[in-house]
Image 1 (spheres, helix red, strand yellow):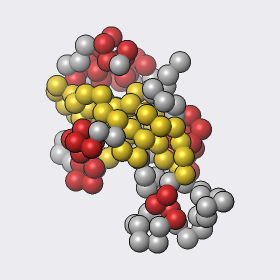
Image 2 (tube, rainbow, N blue to C red):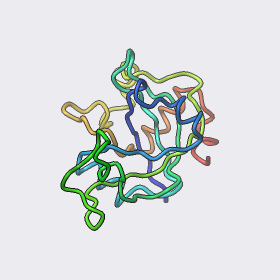
Image 3 (cartoon, rainbow, N blue to C red):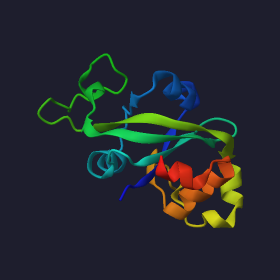
Length: 161
């Protein structure tokens, strides 16, 4: 059974449109152990991802993506010229992981954080839980389906994507 996720990216750093243009990308630079562990240990090929634009007005779900490569060492941790360099990371102990994503579809209608916060159907969703700041988080199926519906997708078709 596949898992469902939400992954945050600032659109000025790497937008959903960038993912569509590139066709696939590695999700590098995560420097939170809990998020790293999810990528390394839990994300599987075929898992679906709500691609969320943070640090923009309004913050929103912009598209749907799929995990196309499971967790592997984040090479940016070993690159001294990278802003994600980690002096404690080594080839033998890379410390950080990443996954690869590919786009499935852009949302016909964005789903803003405000809409999610105001909709009682999203009660308990990690995205709106006070103090929750992880850039990667699991999403319960009923929340995932509700986002897809609000985005204007054919929910069953997207869940089968």
